[in-house]
Image (tube, rainbow, N blue to C red; front, side):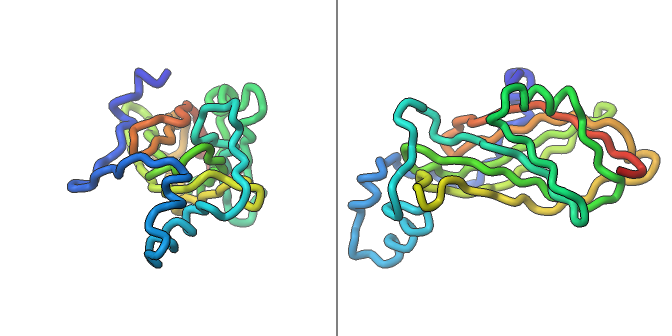
Length: 197
């Protein structure tokens, strides 16, 4: 599945940006403990702020737990990715968005074992041969702890297409990838834009 979409789901690169050297959590904790700005940066990642809950038997460093769609005045649609068959259902059972509705996607995820640098969400939506690509920076995170068992990211609000040309069936492929180029989840999904819910 991913091979057919690799070119579309390549993250944009910022000119001059260089991914930093990989370090373990212990190495980060020992870094220049007298540097106030570095201490604040480590706190923002949650390094040293509780008991790490990483599963030693699970090598993944980022686990996408759920995906959601928020629309004001309507119940959230939450896809629990721990449920067997959830990813397959996203492709085969499109959800409906009312034309012109303002909506926002969100994701909950867990980070394990090491700092996750520059997690991004990439998405390509296709309809009648036309592609629309978007990229959203999620951020960098330390491993989750008992005090903070997961992270949630709400994406920028979007507006569904409207009018006769905007209504119809859309296919999409999405990917969560980090600054190291490691893909954490790639999936296909679909939705229908209709006159009403």
